[in-house]
Image (tube, rainbow, N blue to C red):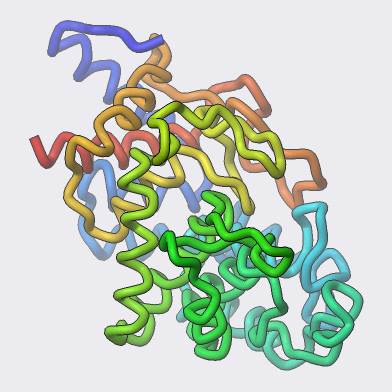
Length: 328
């Protein structure tokens, strides 16, 4: 529950939360230093370098097989596959220029295919060629662009699959003409990562901005037609107002706000309701909980457990609140 504290008490509470966040894994610490306390660039870089050699990041890297795969697959439903681990390493901010990242991701490029993980026509395709579903291809393109690999083929495919309402849907191949928040957020993150890596063409930027408007005109969680709140997604039943980490393919309000922050969107009244919901979830200690975990096998643990204070969700929420308050 959100609390209204006197300024001094609020400042002390924030300091306590920052200490709690810093008393954690390097993957969290370096992002706190960069985004919340404005540490010197040299100190941030030194802390970020530890992601490859200590803590959860190092444990993830150590799980890679000699064939380049994690979990024995390019993709699976259990969250411990090659794609899922690379997504998690991206969230953790593993430096793409580090020797450890280069070795691991080059091994994926050279040895991992979609054999047995997707449609048969993709069996012989290399990992960074992607497969057919835009939600999966969005995640592959996001990690590929982040780690410096060529994903132009996937991006071209995604551009061709954008629906008239501005978003994407994995069910479009089965006749759906309405976009999915889940699929759209995966593709939005991919296009933004691609722009950052290689620069955005007019076509890529235009597609991303149309999809961005898809979210904004729905105020991140309302139906455009009626304005009613979309309480949960149709496909997986996930509640968009419950915050998870990692999010995997699922959309929620915090993930939508984080995308807008990273894209440099100036917050306006269309995000105000979503931001207020984030504020309302801060507990009396100034922290946010891990409200839900999606079923599956995690490759490494990133938080204490569902219903417990979450360093990841607290970091993410504080970033969003900094972004929204800076515009006021």
